[in-house]
Length: 446
Ligand code: ADP
Ligand code: MG
Image (cartoon, rainbow, N blue to C red; front, side):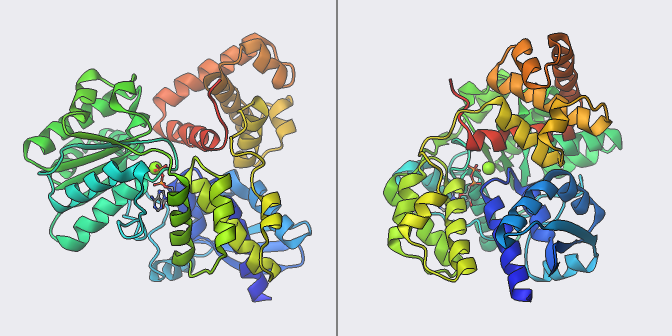
């Protein structure tokens, strides 16, 4: 019985893996432990109310759907808060925890140079990262790595941190994301503790900042980062940044910041070629101590070409299949499990509605319907906002898709979220999460 509990939970995790937008969401799942599968209820334990709330809000529907399909019957989810869950999870050596606003992001122990496969696509970024890790502040400063989602930028950034940590214990390293940097800054301002904040950031040896494209439009944060940058750079401390596009395309960033990003080395990561994709899959399978047929690896690598995270997701699905069904996966069965085309489908409003409904635990019909309940209407407004931002649909078109609402209602919802996003870092982080998740699965280029 307990074995099938683990299997079901693992299959939920594997199906989710490729879709989780960022590390916070990963953290919620890593912190969760499956407890029981009895009748039609799956019970899991989480360490605190925050994790429970996050899972409830964003993933209840998805977890239930995935568990139901794994069990071939309808399963409902029951989440218990148990502080001990945390203890066992920490002792398991996992880094993932829900972070308080003033905690730093831990380095991911599995993201190392050793587990990073080199290929033509990442040669420069990889070599430069190693050089920087070996000669802090003296090789390339700053190092700016860019590439589209799921190509290994975050992995490289952690690798630099892990390398420095293991070779020079006395170096102080901070890994952060531009969003977390923004949130910390705002907290510091709120608590009148900006001097401490500055002191902390300006006294480190290695600053790793992930996803600086999210700084667009955040004036105060850019200002602060500009000064932090100058201070660190001036005293020969190493800075590494990642972004989904090259510095010159960061149009919402102050010119003086962008020009500093280009002072050192700018290195891009391109999608991996077939050979590199196969090598990555082999590495991921061996990390999980799993044997898998070359024919299966090759098929996955042939069918998924643009995003390593998606590649990994497909591998995990294939492995879970063998485990759950207790039989070898054939290329023919696998065909049916992989996305139909190599190309990502074009994003449409239905995809946005689905994503929002799943995350916030509502039905799509509620988003379209008349409910004025606060959380339903906020979710609806976010969906409207994203439909406009990501697809540039006209307000009347969006109105039609949301229960035939009048275009002025849609315009109002759109500008409301636009303002809220500017003013609320948490909502901004949330909305960019959703954006990134959608962009990693659908094409938004017309
Ligand atoms: P990004 O930050 O560019 O969106 P990530 O660093 O999060 O991408 O990578 C997504 C997943 O793909 C991670 O699990 C990472 O380990 C894996 N990955 C990407 N590139 C490589 C590579 N060259 N070798 C091994 N794993 C990789
Ligand atoms: Mg990343």
